[in-house]
Image 1 (cartoon, rainbow, N blue to C red):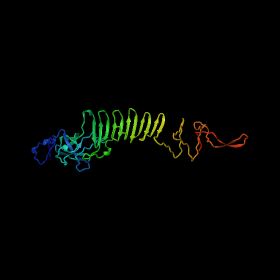
Image 2: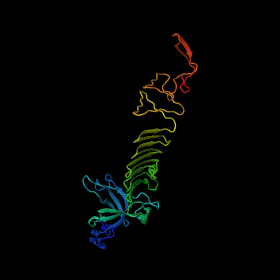
Image 3: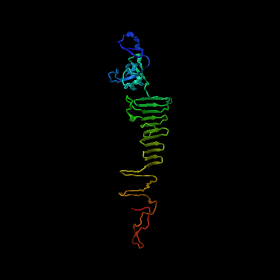
Image 4: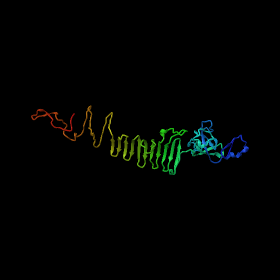
Length: 338
């Protein structure tokens, strides 16, 4: 049986025990800084439990297998699990247990040994990796930040909560999902909520924003937008065509042609006045069907003279009561017949 030293090292059983004090086996008390070398899943032969995730941890040059990680939840139906990253790459190009931790990309962790036994290592937390590139400044203030597998979770000093896609990376540091990088969900300290896939705050490329103080909802997609606020609902496309619902009514605006088509009947009804106006001309009805113009009175051309055209013929009664054919010599200059 191997003998464990105070510093976490192991003396092989082939060395005579007289060299070491046997009691040192139970003296691995303290917190040790180590590095995750490998993750051992329950279905792997090296896993001793067959149910839990285990790790090989290197502490001061010695590998300790079958380490387990401390949990934040430990119930039957309340569990937590975060998989620590093992070594996948070395800056020197070679991977071996004799290398300095800063040359390997495995997570840096703090380890304790349950009851001081070297064969029961427990990961109790994580340490900053020597090659970590994330640096913070005094003006960042108090914050809580975590980045895992390409996703960042941040609560900043102003109580803004941000979930941001930073990009999952391979062992060489190359981002594997570049299309998703920058997308974020943000809950601001003032209660506003924004979902943005473009990656630039306030961008209208593809965004949804809820403004709490104004009770306003905004949806943007490639310069098209739908806005709900106190005034009503507004739908505007990138060509400036607009559809508005307000307290004053419904307004539709087209920058070019406007067409309403129905395969069945169509009805336009107003309790007030209905008006159809075309500055370039107005057509009513179809030459293929009858057109009814109803009303107690029908005023044409703003109430002008009857429909007539110079030269039209009409039949009337003469002075002696006999039928006569006459030519109209006066009529409306505004209203004509086809």
